[in-house]
Length: 234
Image (cartoon, rainbow, N blue to C red; front, top):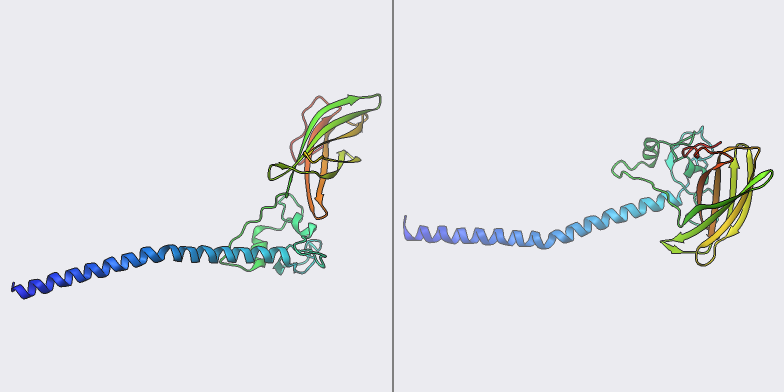
């Protein structure tokens, strides 16, 4: 092969290598930017979807209470809410699979009309309420239960006011109290000895006018048996 041809081949090979190296370098430099743009777009899309779910009532606007109506569009906001992000309790409870009028994921997904954006809804209290049965006092006609209550937000103690309901069968009694700045408090409830079985202590706590939490604690009343499993009582 003539020397000129060898030189041309060598030069062409070097140029091809340089071009490929440049392409690899550009791709390496641009790839993080592309990934950032994609993740930013996904994050923004998810944020807008979340805002829509929390700010829009859906259609019909009262679909939470009107269980016989067909859901056209999906939203959880309360109709005529006084403040933004106020959710409709009926709509939220219909997301619970134990609800008789449970709204299936397929129904919600279809009504939201975002075929390319699957979603999952997880509802958690803003702060946690913990209940421990510390002791009980038996009297002639009733048993009084003493509970220790703790309230924490992001694992830090927080003061809260709360109201509790003790339920067994058709019998309901209530009491109110609060936790200190250390997030600790207590409450007593009394149940008649004429009843026995699994009782529920339902507590609703509040740390600000619009920030609420709750917990449910089951315990055996006037019985040697263990409390029934979650979802049932007396």
